[in-house]
Length: 558
Image (cartoon, rainbow, N blue to C red; front, side):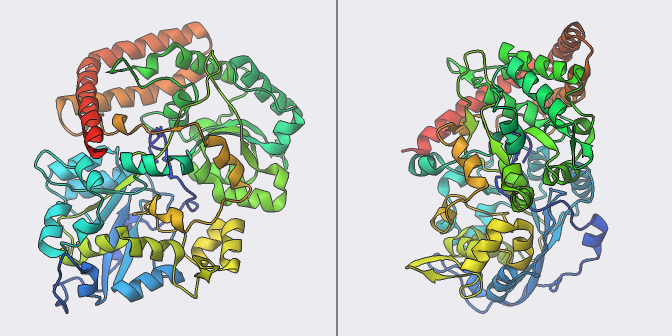
């Protein structure tokens, strides 16, 4: 989840963002996708029923069809049709899915498809990605409201009006639908149950062996990393890594942006004006603390070069002492550690804080969600596509993909629809094995409604409950700050992209600088480049969008 979703909650996921447990890295390559032959690649099958606003449109035609679905996440590893849940959905709707996942750089793969105009039927990516606007402005995707009007009026009965309005474009159409999205009314209704994905984690046995040091201050933070490295130089014969972060990319690092800024409770606005969180003294103080950590040999080189697959392997080995990370993205690894030794798991504790030691303000569910899904103009069957989307976001579809098929993965037990005991046991014990064997509980998360599924979710158990509980009471809604960054080929969008890439090059240099003086020099150079790139215009754009968002959200609460 980009950083700031679940990076920025920023994220991610981020995420999961997101947040949520997602399978280990892998997936089909672009070449695999090219050779995958859909079952129905010509004309749509004739309809067997008429559609109306009173009946789910997907029921009108359940003949076999395969849709190609691109996921802009290289780590997604699951396949449709190999587990009983996706098989059940196909049996019910007639729809099979061929997932296309980039083998390497996500943006390169997606940009190539956009440039060639060869987009697959469905596309799912983070809402913050420039490609969303590029596809819409390039007339490469179809408006969902128009598809619903023509082929499936029932879609508008299951779609959330607030979410459709939130993503409505200037032409009056809505081209995307989000997952993991919570409207202001959702937040009012479910806020007590909301948890954040943003956590500061430590390996339990190491942390306790060090006497549970206070890591909220720069001094305590550095001292704890130093003690951990001295006391635990190796883990099973391999070097221990004092601090883990999300991966560095061409626009920065989620852990060191939205996550860290939220831990420090840095405000997003002051007196109705957006605040430049990046230049906040508390933030700079902690970046310099991390520079000191590197100077003292407490930032392993792995941190700067590892991608998610390498990080997941090291998490499973318990090689990190501390991490600024999204808790849902280490579910499988946490399970493995718990099975090996319950004391070797990662737990959430109070980490970096501001000078006043204020509690963190963690990103909770927002109306933008985590990812958004679009339907390509090249879609092989417009009617079946919008109807399948309608099914997926409906309560029936949500239940099918969460609980699976009755009698197979769940039953009505004590008057409640819930996972069968053996299914729940595997879910809590081995997430990766669960995904492959059952395929339920958000294995296929593309359209997940994290509010709707609360009615079927089993109570959280250890080792995950502790991490979730730590975030309760610290979770906030930051919806009003979503979707304010300029994107695309506008003057502001180009400037914003250039600034982001400049930051992506500057951040690791700041951490690797030899002194605070060198840090200051690099920092001032970044600010100069930021200004020359058009920072003032970008900020003016963001302020206007922020004010629009505030008005929208107020309307949704009426």
